[in-house]
Length: 107
Image: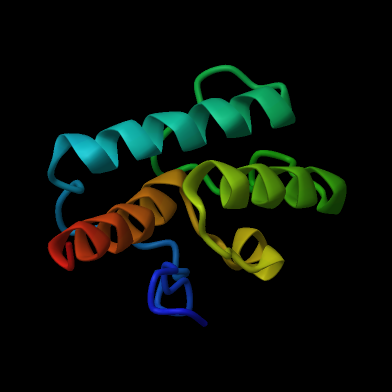
């Protein structure tokens, strides 16, 4: 994986809560975009930060749509299996936000 891409291998998938919410407006905006995207594709209002894709009734076709749109929106390479590993919008936003912060530090 390129250095400019988020590392999704380390995302939390054990269903436990994060010790604290992601800090910073950047992560919050990313999470909002992710939640809106999930809401649109899953046709569910009110996606919460710690909702699980499968618990929401997501299927493989919807997973491909979500991953494709997220990869384009955030210029990342998220593997499809991530959505089936219990990753939440909050987890994804944190990983994408940390990658963006790392990229901006290098400029």
